[in-house]
Length: 227
Image (cartoon, rainbow, N blue to C red; front, side):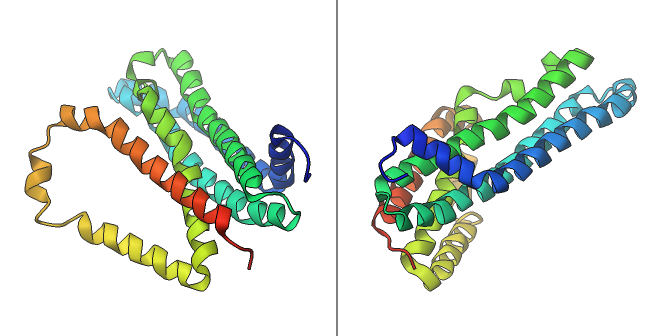
């Protein structure tokens, strides 16, 4: 694997992680099948009660669950996969690029499953107008594609660099966010922000957040040592 091209390295990394990836994909696909089957039974009742908007609930739950599975898979890539590549004398840049490629590929697969579930339900019940996933803008899908991968890269980098103190660093960051979010000094400012203005800047805020996570995590892992 040391002298293989980057696409081959990414493929080999995915193949090595298949025993972990495949059960996650099967779980997500199985839940999608169960969701479609459940809506076959429940939707006539929901339609009579004028709750047609609930048709998207299974797909939204699948989307949320898939992002959690994607985070777990990406953590495996940037911890086990990264360590294995470094131990095999593969340069850190190449193994990180392969981990990013594998993580984004797996993320795309997990996003496709709830979208297919939504499409099947829409075709079955003629609900394209009320389906929520179809209303998500392009930058929303891009954010979901990168969210788990960039977060996993940053978390694994913190643990690799700070080692035993990494958990304390993550706890400090988490507590800082929790303490800042309900701050009374920020509430008047947040209440004056209009929804239209927030939606206008939200793509750029998400882009800045993901770039900061990705750059920080990648730089730290490119210099970290195995322990």
